[in-house]
Length: 441
View 1: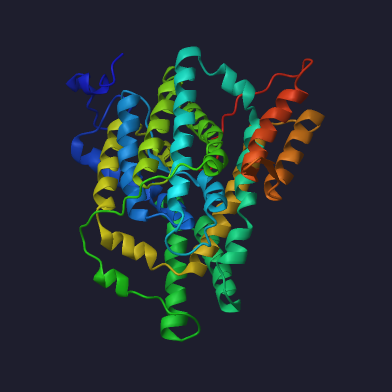
View 2: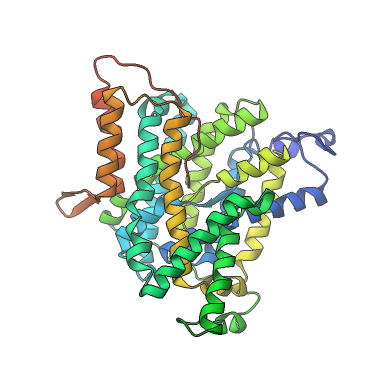
């Protein structure tokens, strides 16, 4: 089966309505319109993640588009997916670079080396899965493990917005206003507005901030000069990775989370389409891994499959992979607009802090949702101990040093969960169930 099988399909794959399968497509104008919708759906998180790590959001958008095209080619156009910035990298990147939460990350090159290393590990896992299948992954990372590790990603980050993204009482109140705006959008709106709860909530909070500061003088005003000065078209700021052993050891384990995310994505799409995509899982891992390598090598964030796009597919019943090619091309165009990047940089820090509180909380809750969806039995002491120890290791930022290397927080929690579960499972135990819920980015 070649990489371009999708492109070799005959003309009768064109469909005008109803359920559109992955290897079918709408007429090109409708396909392009659907691509715009997917870009909007992934936009908020794909832009938010690089800002929280001090990366260039323009470059992140550009590399997400390029990464999606890479994924499309390696999977032969069989797996509908958009690759956006992964939230799983935020905690380890902040820890590895000492990023303070505002402006460009001065140590971004160290993070990029780790992201490339993570992509290499991920690609190797993909090659192994392609050769021997997925059962070993499902045994190594049952729901109790993946749920705990995903929850830890959010909990480990909890102190960042609260301690570093509000300099005074007014800014703390603005954080509260921000997460209230997001909550109101999440609960009291419907349709696409509700799907864009983070983006819409951020816009509403920014308007409130501008009224209170620029209008009433209650705090540091928003600065729009950068937007006016930015060109409409320009090249993003590319950065060359620096390969540090300590940073790579800290960031590379994120590959385990990316595997869990992609595994959940494929299981979800399989359930929605009725088509078993397990045969493409190895190629999906490999495509995501290579896309992460390419992104990190250029200065972008690590990438992963997106739950937002699953939501759009579920709502529209359009699973055509051609839609994601259109979305990727749109993202590439946006990546070459400094004006777009300047708008993102003008967002006030406390507003970003309020959004971060919501996002990090949602990540933690997504871990708990994995337990609920898979009916993890906490009356089983093995599951109880694995979850309990993992949560405290990650939340407390437990660190182990190996000579000059330090493995802390998310790293110790991830490896600890896998090793502890394997140890406690010796001697015969109930079989682990397969994770079916996609964790947060």
